[in-house]
Length: 156
Image 1 (cartoon, one colour):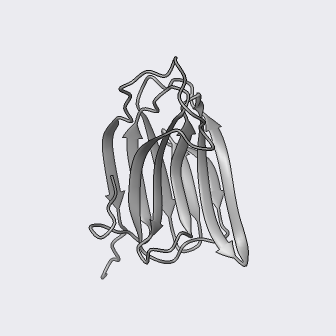
Image 2 (cartoon, one colour):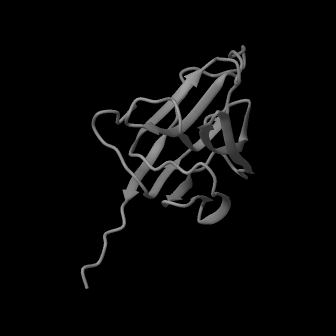
């Protein structure tokens, strides 16, 4: 699913409640790209590899002469249940949270342009590898809820 050409955001609080699917070759991700169509910057609200779904990645990619990124990982205790993944994106920083717990902050290369969302479950590829005989199909990246909040300036 993509919101390209339909919905974009510049700064705010973004929350998704989801389950990470298990299985070699699965690659669930919720990420953002610039509405301009450029490949960078990129904000990965969450990424996981189905062969190790307990390890979730949070990444801010940007470009200054060459590609740069800042990232963190976090261990999820139980992937069979829903978890809330949140970012708070401001002009100067991006903060990542899992179930309300602060995980990581990036203060370099913060995107300043509007971005759209991509929610996908890729299968195969260099990073996740190919599915094997133990990977169950059909498989799903189940989204329970997705919310976007934007700060409204007070006139008083």
